[in-house]
Each structure stands twice: as structure tokens, then as C-alpha cells.
Amino acid sequence: MQPSRLVILGAPVAHSLSPAMQGAALAAAGIPLGYEALHVEPPALADTLAGLVREGAAGNVTIPHKEAVAALCDEVTPVAQSVGAVNTFWSAGGRLFGDNTDVGGFDALARHAAGAGGAGLSDATVAVLGAGGAAAAVLVAAAGWPGSRVRIHARGVERARELAGRIGVGEVVPSLADAVAGADVVVNATPLGLRYEDDLPAPLAIIDRRSLLLDLVYRRGGTRWVQAAHADGRRAADGMRMLVEQGALAFVRWFGVEPDREAMWRALD
Ligand code: NAP
Image (tube, rainbow, N blue to C red; front, side, top):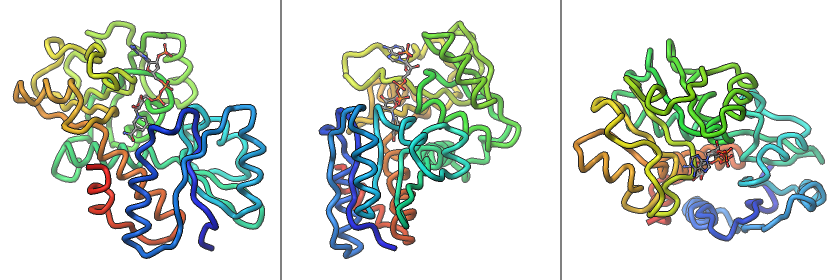
């Protein structure tokens, strides 16, 4: 059944690009629904979700609610179960369902950036920088690349150990230089780069020239890390494709049809 209403829940949420992107997808599909950003503080989350379920609403979830929504769902997909977080929800018959499309979104970004349908991701050594919710999605995606090995580096070693233990993927490497040395793929899953003046997640000098750099942070024209990598003749991509693909996978969950991805990209421009 089609959702009665579409929202994104977060705090803060005003900065989210999802309303513009999903609004464009809805318009292109001729679906007469809006997509609203709902600022919800953590204490109000359970009641807000209960109200949305009564209305038959669906939507997305962003910081800081992804883990809490997973716990509030009546049923989650195996992928959301593995990540321990939900970024996409829908409701039916008074029940709340959750999925995590960040995993598929990251997988699509990596396959596109690696080229050849992602063939080069098999047997890859993947260095993941950061140990939060986005890193969890990366670990689950990388676990699906045959023969891959994952290293996790985060400034909080305990958080990294907890993540590796919970997901059952990855070796924690306390030294950044050791984590990225010889890696085929280096993923920035920290917020570094959200502000242009931020430090780079890892200096290019310690990263192998043939490594593929994937930045989950996105910025029009590329993040500074991606720009620096391109200027140095390296392969790199920012997280814009992950944003579009996680949104497209959510759209398929809600409506059972593929959205117009071109319209979504245009809206982000
Ligand atoms: P999170 O749960 O807050 O985790 C962030 C991780 O980065 C933590 O390990 C944190 O360490 C670390 N970190 C934070 N500030 C740092 C700094 N200044 N230097 C080094 N490490 C730092 O956040 P998240 O949900 O995983 O999201 C991370 C980023 O991914 C977001 O900022 C967002 O831009 C991006 N993202 C993109 C997409 C997409 O569709 N492209 C989707 C999801 C997320 P501590 O635990 O020590 O704080």
C-alpha cells in the first residue's frame, strides 16, 4: 500500500538534501505526495513514530535516530539487523518496518567508482576510517565482496572494537598509517570534510597511489580530500552517489518502482 505521508526524522534535519531529492523523484513519478523534514528530539521519537505508524506514513531516518528506530521497529530486514540501524521505514497494518539502504547505497558507490561492475572489489583490502553508523554500513557492504579484508581505524579504539565485534567484520588497526598502507580501498566514514577547512581524513602521502578513495561525505564539486586526490591523478569519489542510491533504494521500498535517478541528481545540483 502506498504511504499516506513521507518524512525524514532527524535532529538536526534542516540541512538534509533528501526533501529536494525525493521531492524530485516523486514529481517525476507523478506521485502526489510531499516529503517533509521533521525535526524530532530523541525524547519525542517513540511517540512521533507511533503517530506516523497510525497514519500509514513512511520515510527516512538520519542522525541521531538510526539505531533507536531499529529498536522500535516490529520487523527489520536482515541488512538493517546486521548494521543495527534503520535509515528507511514504512508502516502497514499498524506495524513498523525498517531497512538500511545505506548499505546498498555505499555498495553502489563503490562498484561505480571501482569500475567494471565492482569486479576489483573482490579480494580487496578495505581501510575504513571511523566507527559510527556509516562505518557499520560500509562493513556490512564490504562483507559482501568475496575475499575482502577490512581494517577499521577510528580515533576511539574502543568504539572501533565494539563495532568490529558487533558486526563480526574487520580488524581494528590503531595506527592510521598501518590501516591505509597497501589498502585497495580507503573509505572516509568520519564527518571530516563536512566543513571545507577540516583536516583531511588521511594525508595522501601515506596512501598508496593505486588505492581507490571513497569519501562518504559529499559536497558539490567534491570534498577537499577527493579534490586533492583527483589533482594528484588518483581515483576517488565523494558520497553523493551513495546519497542518491540509498534514496533510490528507499523509494523502491515505499512504492515498488524505480525512481528517476536523473531527476534526483538534477535536484541535488
Ligand atoms: P557518527 O556515528 O557520529 O560516527 C562518526 C565517526 O567519525 C566516529 O568514529 C567518530 O569518532 C569519528 N569522528 C568524528 N569526528 C572526527 C574527527 N574530527 N576526527 C576523526 N574522527 C572523527 O557518524 P556517521 O553516522 O557514521 O556518519 C559519518 C559521516 O558519514 C557523516 O558526517 C556523513 O557526512 C557521512 N554519511 C554519508 C552518507 C551518504 O549517503 N553519502 C550516509 C551516511 C553518512 P568518535 O566516536 O570519537 O566521535
